[in-house]
Length: 493
Image (tube, rainbow, N blue to C red; front, side, top):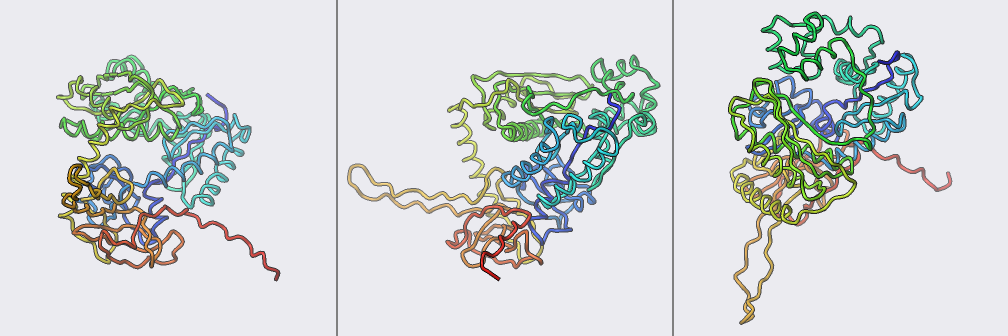
């Protein structure tokens, strides 16, 4: 391990939800939930205001609605989040050539490799400056942890949340970790914690006292040995630059073992989409899809499938992960699921069959969503609440007009097909010819309610309701969260 706290871990605070609050003045200080708004939706991020009601990521949206019925439920705007992420990662790469992104909003940085920090004082100064730069460039806040290892830097950033900085001085790690709950260590979720509790192990110090052999007996060779090393604060993993990554993966540990096979399939689907999001964010593709399943008894199974060529198509990865899941017995319960892609490349080889399947899948989803939208209530001028009938996959309104087909023989026009009404996703950007930019507050019964405001509005904007096919209403583009500086006037004074 290092002798100076020169490994930095940055974690943006409630990233998606904070971005939405910054973009929408009417939601600042309010409970905001970002994720799928349909009946099978899952929470991606909840604002700190929503978390006070018990809402958290990976929770079914239906449960989140019951806990926080007055929250704003919004469909993610990943194009905006990626733009903000690129700004943040550029700030990190200005500090060091060794930046290891973990997701759009989280990364490790080796400050020593960038020669910007060599001791505690210089590392802390870098962290303070970084947080100020992130706020200036993006308008958002991030929490920073500084330590001599990746594990401790991540623990420090968690301690710093929200909007703080924590530095763990080298030499104090064992004393800091010892009295803490075993849950503070990476890889210890509710099920592992309960397993250790039944063995009389409640704190990190008690893990160290139990010894490696006992941990291996309780949790298995790999998991037990890893946990014992973490308890001793032994973590020599280097910060690995993104270009050196050999795989991209995401995984979730669940508070309660999942027994419902349908829920397991939903989780694998969601993880596959998150994995592809990271894959695309890195500008990479891959040819091997990997599924990881940790069952109720802590046994971990890994299954993989190698495709005909590299891809970054979410449909291809979802389908491969689903096929792999069919070969895994989950009847006893699942406590962890993960989806990864390896065999990375800098190009993609499109799978036309997968694309066709993807198009059919999207069409089916559109039909289901349209039926749900008809039963949705129209939101009035109150606080923004997303409508459950919205689609989770689209990026704006969907039009379904058929062309004027001509009969080949007689030339007569076929019976005209009524164009499907456009649908608008809660939280997404729109622009009106008269009222300017705004965002969808809710939709249903052939109408869409829009709040007209921008990130630079001083007060919450006005709310108006339109027909979903209003010709003056169109899809809009996200505005920067920080207002661009106006150029100085060229006219002489």
